[in-house]
Image (cartoon, rainbow, N blue to C red; front, top):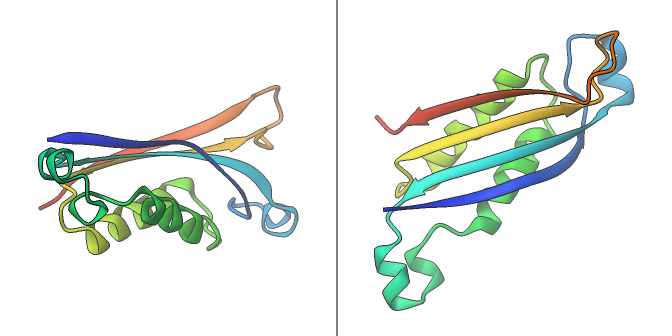
Length: 119
């Protein structure tokens, strides 16, 4: 087995419960980690035998572009897509961070993290 990680995927998105968040948007950062079998690709050196991290990045970017009230909802959509589109992934962990959240304090970021195993 092995792990593929994409760290600090940066997006400008429109998530949040406040009406203003849907209009002005905010900066976000996403970390994605998938567990998969890397033994075959380590021998064959073929992209077809591994999880393409270009596809993983695309999934994150597309899901981050769809407005949601809660970061948990976005993270769940990312996990569902990874499992739907990449059968070899057995576990997915995603962390979605809102940078400079509008919470009335000096807070650098707020992060939610979710982890799911394939059924």
